[in-house]
Length: 501
Image (tube, rainbow, N blue to C red; front, side, top):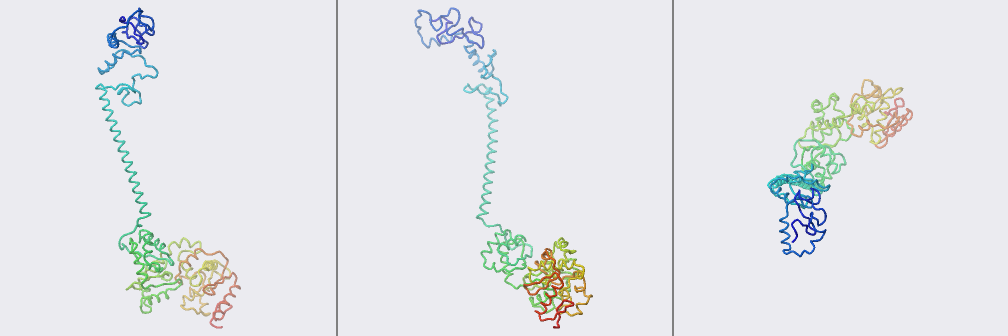
């Protein structure tokens, strides 16, 4: 049997610190392989002649249990370490300095809770009360963090799902759902103008802009289902704001099917009054008397100075049962006043003082001209004459202004030579004191956007043909041609047609 302290083959012998041959901390506890101290056998061999010892593994375990405690070959007293951990503390002995890649039992700055709460990778778990307490506290913190993270994720997923649902609903509504529409018969009254030749979609845009319908699509869908929608005439219609598309269409169709008054461009007030009397089946002169008596209550702007001429806007007006002349007159004045807004800002570019002068010039142009495509050239001719000095002396020299004031078309020498008549533009320079007709949009636009040219004269030969001239001689020839075509005489001095041939 080997002597106590003798090393077994391949097994390092543990020795207590201070014993002969014991290794210092951090160094192997033996002098060499298989050597335990003085008196030991040769390396890697048992005593010579020693017989095999009985007992086998049990004997070796008994021998190891009887061996004195102390650091092993790796310099660590594992039994002392285990005892210290079970007691909940740390070993009192100085520990060997850790190798470069080994854990040094110090907490890392970035490790929350410290690395000593659990054993290292593949190490043993700390089962002491302190270790369990730390794990429990860390678990609570982790649970709170996990719970918060789960809540955030849930909210994000809910938001994504909600957004996707809303987008899907919007996509469905845009592509498959009904278009936005009001419900009911509407609220406050509003007057809407349907332009001549307007399509269903254009009507829808007009109605939406006026606040009558909620969407163009709702109206066009209703229009497509109603055959009478294509028969709606241009003009002004009395509707209400926030009507359903079907209700708005129904109102348009009903008013379109009733009586209507259509006023063409260029009529003067006397001619308009006669049309209103005829349409309302009133005695002749009724509307003229109403206009004179109620002029202050018709809505004329201050710059009109109580003169209704030029403010009876030409378009189509629906006639309702029981309608009075003043109802129509108010509609006409309101429409004209709205159309004339902003003309002051455009007057200077046309060489005029204000918007009212724009209306006056447009009224002359509308009465003189027959062909709208010629209006821009006619407007330039009028402006050239107003600016011209010399022989013209800023005089327009037009029949229409004098005819308006006299109420007749036939003029004689006395009429032409009468300087007391402010509408006599043969004698008086500049524009007449007021409009001579009720112009439309084409004439207004021509005055504010005249063509370029040096013309000083024009004469409308027929409804589609107007002659322009830059010299007196050229103009005289044109006027003589016109007078002969009309079966009238020609005054060469005044360059004017006469009744005498």
